[in-house]
Length: 326
Image (cartoon, rainbow, N blue to C red; front, top):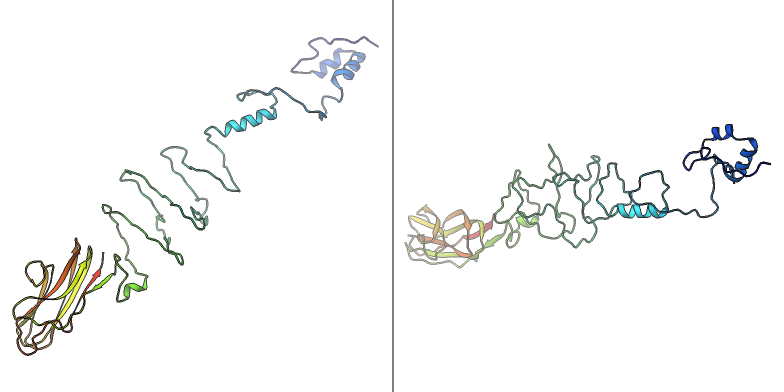
């Protein structure tokens, strides 16, 4: 048997192995020796090898980009590094179990963030968890430009129903606009609350609020002298429809009623009045006026008549009422 040999450098390389050159240039004995000690030990090099012991290697730098085999340590280091840097993924990412994050933004500062437009039947829920007790902010910002806007159900020829705080048993206050903003309505308002039709209206500060003056006893008067008949005490700020009526007994040529901010006056503070010409008894004069009330103040219904006789009175069959319209 031939002595152990050191194969020439051109037979083997740390990178490449040429089996054809190896078979054509070595004797069978040399090939058998090399197979037993190197090439086919413990299995042939073209056969998958299973390592029975742990194979360890040096961990390369994160920036390594070659055919060097990555160790488990390199893989861990790589993914920890990926999690710490900003990444732009070019492929679709699907998270089947959800995603937890504090911030979602478009990829560019002026870009558009699109959520839930995959299909017409896609449900999009934002902050819909039960018993939510924190504030949901939508489009908040200081000093927004005049072109900024928030669109809800605003697609072309949209037929969406937009519902806000109308679930069964829902409570809360819906605030629209501020003192310096404008609300533009392109559709009629349809009240859907029963109390708007009740005698007391909807309550203080709400559209439809009704305030009635106390109906006094019959008021006697001096012919030709204004007399306060009813008082709406401390009428709140707002836009109101003021309406009132005054009955009159006795025989005369006229009856005047007026709405005034000054008691017993149809001149100072009077902002509306009406004259009824009649000579019969028990005549009733009525009037209505839209009032923009800018301060809390008393509003009076003033009556005056020249009627004389045993039935000389005002305010029988009368009323004085304010209904809030804004």
